[in-house]
Length: 176
Image (tube, rainbow, N blue to C red):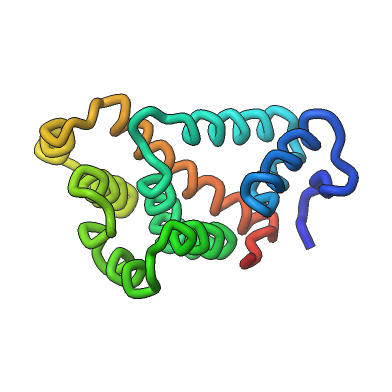
């Protein structure tokens, strides 16, 4: 049982209902982190704005973002998002073998070279932020990534870390 009071889907009204309905229609599920955020109108709005921003990002595609979320969730043993994003990757055509290779080495992600480099960078920064060097940034820039893209991708990954901590603290991290 959650340690905070959230808005149950059948009791949602206003913006919470709009967000829940959208997610149910488009993802087939109301992600647990969104339900957690319903305890605070500001937090729900922030989560919702982030989802909208990333779904419309001009350079960070669905496969790249799903890969980042999956790998970060797995790194932090974040059950809900590990399972949710594994399902997203499977729906994109990745096999269990593809996912296993990516887990062992982000450079093996079944993405193009540019996206694979971004996933590897985000995971390096998540695991060992002090190890990031100017050469890492230069490599990404040489592949065509802007500083805006690099910041957005890393923020997407670090947001998973914060969400993981909150979900665990409030006893809401259940596998889906």
